[in-house]
Every structure is written in structure tokens, then in C-alpha cells.
Image (cartoon, rainbow, N blue to C red):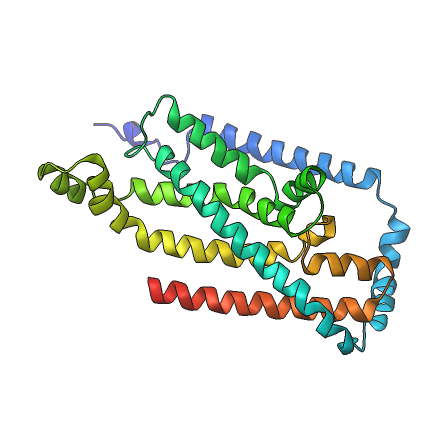
Length: 269
């Protein structure tokens, strides 16, 4: 056998793959240049260069915090926690049926019901909670109720997606064992499916509640109640020491919710 038959050296990619890779990088660079041009089109660079001075000026006005404003924030803080908690509970009632309809091993119909469930999940996840709040404030008026429903609509997709993935990953052997006893579909669901997804369901619930605490703090900026409403009021009158107190309270609230969420998830898992 001649040496010419071994002249071909090993290559990580074929010529077509190399060409596709370079075209991909070229498209990425072109997209970056396009985005840069769009950004520069309406950017006033004089304001950008002056931004550090403006930030220092506002920062100097934010200290010292106005601590006597703190007691008046207790009710909005309670509203924020209520928005996150009730919104999460409302989302669970709607997300659980959607998750079972979306999972391939529990859906009544993979051709008709499952696509509808997936559409609900995608629609919920693609619209931000602030946009939901804007729409709901216009429909049902400003206040806590709009915030609760906005949080719920935003959370449906998150909870349902993670839950239906957990349902699809259950151990089929347990389902087959319960089915072999002659159990009905409701009994199979009760004894074979639900026990396997309960830890995941609990973890998803607590995790989403933690996220909703953070999101509910800013819903008031569009009139949906909570701390965000007081933040908007303080910003409108340039009451920077009050803004500092609100920021500190939001930070403490988020840290506490994160701690609670971590402890509960650790206890469950």
C-alpha cells in the first residue's frame, strides 16, 4: 500500500462546516454592527458623557436616607408580599391542569389538547409581568388586584413548563405497576404520578414565589400597587432620600425571600 493513501490529515470539520461557521461569524458581526447603528441613531452622546456627574449628583441627594418615611412603607410592603403570594397561588390552580395537558404521557390528546396547552405556556412566558400589569390596570383599574392577576398570568407558563417536564420524566415502571392492579385512570394519577412529582412541584412553587416577590416590587410603577407605587410617587417629586429607603426595603425583602426560598427548597429536596 503506497504512502499517498495516507496523505489525508484529520480535520475537525468538513469544508462545508467550516464555511457555515465562517458565515455564522460574519452574520453575527453584521448583526452587531446593525445593532450598534440603531443604538447610535437616537443616542445623544453629550448626555452619556455627562452621566457620571449626574449619577454622583443624584447619589449625593439620596443620603442620608429619610428613615422616618419607613413606617409608611409597611402597608405597601404587605401589599407587595400579598401580590406575590396570591398571584403564585392563583397561577398554581391554572398551571397544574395546563401542565398535565402538555405532558405527553398524561395529555388527553397529543394532536389537539397538547398544542393548546403549549400555546398557553408560551403566551404566558413571552409577556413580561409589567406588560401584563399595564394591560390589567387598563382593564380592571389600578390597585393590588391588577398586580395579583399580572403575577398569576406571568407565572402560569413558568410553573406549567417545569411541571410538565417533571411529569414526562416520571418512572414509567411505577405507573405500569399500579395499572397492573386494575386501577382506574384517577387512581393511577393519584398513586403513581402525583407522588413522583410532588417534590418537584413544591420546589417549583417556592422558586416561583421567590421570583414573584422581586417582580411585585416594581409593578406599582404602572399602577398595580405595592412598593413600586410609593417608589413612583417619590421619583415624581424627586424625593431622593425616600427613594433610598424604598431601595433598602426592597433589597431586604428580596434577601429575606431568597433565604426563605432556599431553606424551604433544601428541606423539600
